Each structure stands twice: as structure tokens, then as C-alpha cells.
Length: 134
Image (cartoon, rainbow, N blue to C red; front, side, top):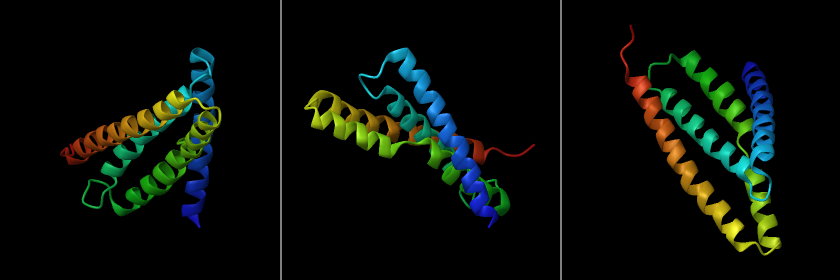
């Protein structure tokens, strides 16, 4: 039951973070392109890659810390923070409005940048995880 609580609390924090950052980006760059959704998907991909690398069974975390990282950080915060459903809706809107460049740009940029971000996050997490403790 505690696992559900960690996921719920993390999800709430991730959702609030998504709402805040998306609004900040929209106020600075406008809403003609889904810059906020793109930024959230990229940073969320980086974070989940980082946490995923640190939380591997052969890493430095004990089983209790690994469970917390997985439940609270990955499923909770990252799950509430990332916005793949918003990405899909924005892309559909662009397609319905025949804004082919925005639709294609949203798909290509999101996939490529998020894959790079998750890879970089994983590399950083693996480097941190492999460091010898003091």
C-alpha cells in the first residue's frame, strides 16, 4: 500500500511541475508551437534515464532505495511530469488544422530529442552509479 502512496505523491508533484513549466514556457515563447510539451518530454526523458540508470539492480542503491526511486521518482514524478498524451493531442490538432510542418516537427523533434535526453540521462546515471562511495 505504501508503494501506491509514493506513486500518488510523486505523480502530484510531477503534474504540478509540468503545469508550472508549461505555463512558463508558453508565456515566454507563445503557444503557436508546443514548446512547453516538447521541453517537458525532453527533460522528463532525461530524468527517467538518469533515475533508471541509478536504480538498476547492480547499481549502488539498496533494494529499499531502489524501490523508492522506482515508485516515487520514475512512476510518480516522471509519470506525472511527462506529457506524451499532451504531445499526441497537440500533434492531432496540427494534423486536423493541416499544419503539416508543425505536426511533423513535433513528432520528429520529440522523438529525437527525447531519445537523446534519455540516453544522456542514462549515461550520467550510470557514471554516478559506478562511482565508488566515500
